[in-house]
Length: 172
Image (cartoon, rainbow, N blue to C red; front, side):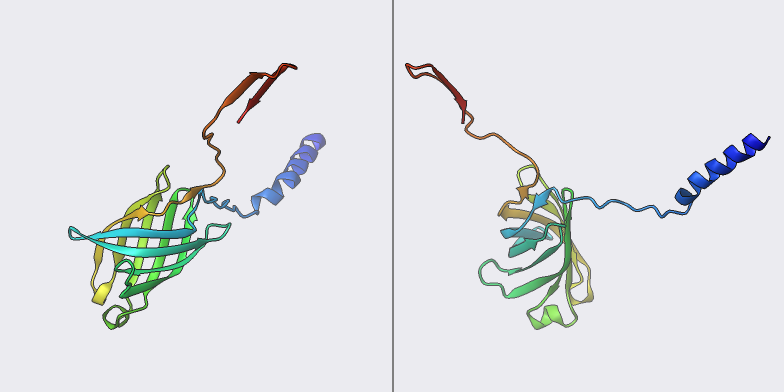
């Protein structure tokens, strides 16, 4: 009986620290580097509105950046207030910074998009323009996110050449 109690007590002492530990979720690393310049199309009620978009991403997947509509003229400008790239998903909030109708009341845009294997982004956007609720599709038309942690062979070649002094073999 003493052995049973001693073993039970020993087991309890070994398990006890784990019983009170907090579970932590490991962060999902970004699969993409989205740093760069893009042209994106935001469709609203069947009409495409093109925007410039410039993103900067840190190693943890946090985003900063800005953009505007129309492309090249940027009458309606916006700046990211927060954003992340997690796995294959980009998600950000941006405040419009110009024109009075988009700033008072403050228009906040929310974009969520999936990054495709080719580095393009497709998803949805929404905002609260003039205290309303608008939503539509979001697609990058120029600019490409760069895949992280993957390699792809390009112009792969094999050299098998007799030099006269022996065979030369190699890969390019």
